Length: 611
Image (cartoon, rainbow, N blue to C red; front, side, top):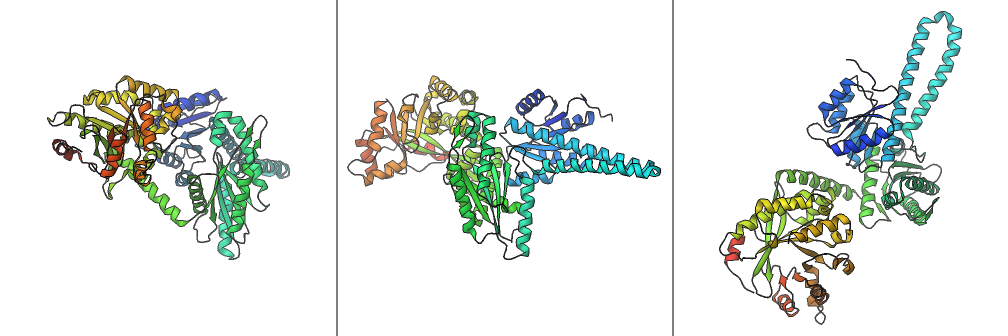
């Protein structure tokens, strides 16, 4: 095979990603930086590209069908021709396990999506410089061997030159080591060096029972907002300032490292007890709460910190950092700008969450979901007016799983989009079947919940149109339930989608009204048909006999805006009577029926209940 450089003046970069959009964006941006850029959608294309022209660097996505990024990296590292080509992983996977696996397979760096392009450029440049340095070292070694072999008769002169070349090689090696082990922006140790030093501390703790240490994992809570709004130059300036402040909180024997992005690792050694580590965390939070006066802006920042005591029973330093990271995420989940001590139960919860996520991904592929339908009753006629579609997960091992357990995971991972569209398709199909039954009311409606994440998808309207076309359901009988977080976004995309929904005569229902932002200034700007009162307000009516809590106010708001009102969680006849006295339009809850399986709905309709 003939391996030729495309352009000797340009470095060649091969991008491997199954997403054409990702390839196009990265290719365009790197090409503007003066690189030859080639693209591959899968392993076979990548192999052909390398057989044609050997790249200087590979950017590799992990999540790809058939042959994923891990396997692609392993194959390249096992092939002598490509073994020395540096591989940088670029992936949305941000778990410490994914990153460790990437480095174990031979990856030289790991960039988490969504990435900052400036960071990608710097990392690419660093790795290309590293490779150039390695090649230079190999070249020097080859020259040294040749000179020793062919110039034995000129030993004195060769020895003098050899000493100079050895010194040059040492300088290159020192430079290479410095690049590999330090962050180019802040000059701090990077993740590789931090793990090495953490390992040394763990070994020392195993040997000396009196030696105590702790590891802290710090993540800035608002850095992305600053970076996106003020730009990456300001973001870099802020990171340098943050690193400086954190360093002021530590003793000379402690270690501060930049682990990537806006994440920092701290190794505190020679501690008396955990309270010393807590004091450092509190000092860091205090220091970061002071405004940063940058060259052009004043920026406010806070952070979440996870603390893990240096237990000598840990097998690997990576596990120490992993558990500190877990504690940090718990601190972030509890409100940010705080610290949290690691508890072993957190790790078990994290593992369980990971298992749920993995099972949920398979569940989406296998359509392991079923829909229950809860009747909605008109309080004016006392008869059924429609049903709300409620999704449940029928797990092959654990059985029926409630939405409170899997919906948050689906929201976080983005799987909620596929689930919501499946529910909408299935519910519309089912409504069409029911409408063919003679006992079904003419204007029976179906109500489906849509996640706020769906409203960021530009093809949402096209998907709704397709479902209506395929199921032949009348849009007038379709109600889409959204939460306040959708309209609080108030973006042009959201406004356009909602306007398109209105144009199709589909009704929009504000779900759980009053439990979120409750911004009336936003509500009147959107074409809402109904407000749904959360169950918690219905329950509170019995404790506020005089005012009945907020329910009268919510009904009054809806009436003033020409909207109907649906009360959730009605369980007693007393609640029903109070809602009727307040002129509430609709209600649903266990008083009328629990959510029904689809085969039970027709019988429920045929029974013609009246309340």
